[in-house]
Length: 158
Image (cartoon, rainbow, N blue to C red; front, side):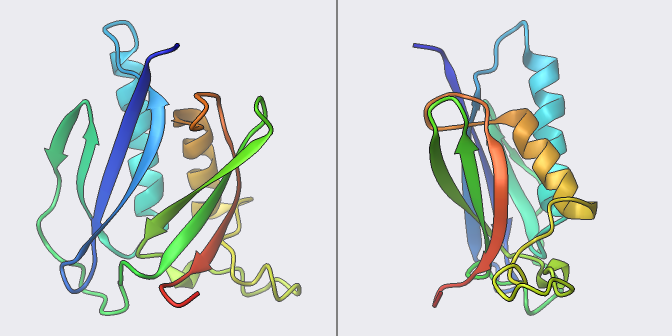
């Protein structure tokens, strides 16, 4: 069995509550350390582009305290999430992850299909950056590369 890494990122909301998301990844080795750190930093930056919360910590081999402040936006709530649907093309299976404090200003309001209006457009801007970073770094629960199929707004009561 291949070595599997684990990347966890915590986001603080307006009330200083912490929400987190964890992704499977390639395990860090001496040979791939620098490349994996670059990829994890790109994922962290892409996540920062689609959330309103403050990235508090990330954990990939070592836990790093990033910021202890709360965001100024009172609508930044850990219960407002992007539901990420990941597709493992090798195993033909899907997995899902919740990314807290979704930035609802990025919703696909121009879309005419009402079901897609609740989504983050993945073809341009912050959505494209997230898609690219996820697909470069994240692995499925079955340890294969993934495709980010969608990011849909959900909340606690959804």
